[in-house]
Image (cartoon, rainbow, N blue to C red; front, top):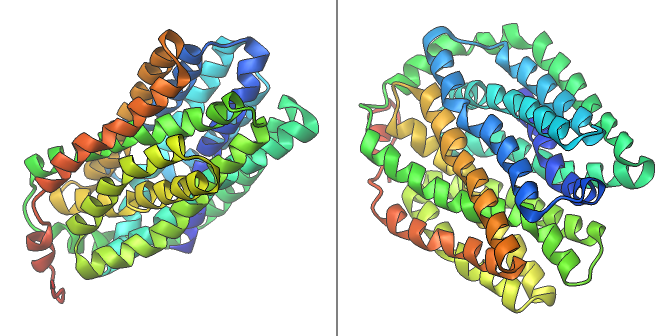
Length: 383
């Protein structure tokens, strides 16, 4: 789990560097808010929408090499994008980095399920915390490198990804030893529930619209309010670090009280907290933004486990869908919100992003319990 979580950290470190680079790239190429949204869409489309394909490949053939390969490709792509001389080349390299992210996640989350044992939500929380920390470190390190060395300093973003990718490559024989037993245990979870998975994907997609709206526009919102680029990126990092803390809390809570109640509670709180950030501001707004991170990021692992429990016989596909296609819709939402900001105001786009989780509450309330699937596992007592 330490190896998987560290690899997850490196992959999402590369993915998380993009939001911090956006204000600098916006100035360099004189981008509109819509073109900023296209950058985010390029990242999310490649890193998310094609994940189900990698998940299908993983289910049918197994593809453990995707772990080290995905980490390395994600880091190299974003590093080269930072210093690309043309906007179109930035888009291409962001797409390449996203493919690395997409390659890693289905296989990584599948093996995280294999090694988690009976406390799947807690185990997946430890896997997710690596990604949370990586996504939080990405903006901090990218901002530091660009301030110190200019956009060319972004080339150094590849270094940790290449190092961790090499370690993952060396450890693949050890990871492979978990595959047979882990697959058999998860397959005993019950029958597939595609309708339940569809509802869950709707919740994730709507939550992602709000999340990627914040990821994209919080730094620009702070600049709009008269703060520096660094201040906005620091708030972004705070939100992401708070999400890491939330992950460690939400996983055990989901194992103890159930996945659905924890997810529903987090979704109910998300919109009001975003409105507090926008309307109240100041210290109270910063606290609210941190709590948004805890609610949204903290339940990534929970929804991943739920997707695997709703589709226990195709867990690679389930993982690819839950953190892939549905999350990718959040990237499309970022483009739409960018268009709203261009045609109206940035504030209007932010308020629209805050409204998205309200519909997610309705879908989350309709989710069936996954306790039946978990009850079929030997040795598992469901409260």
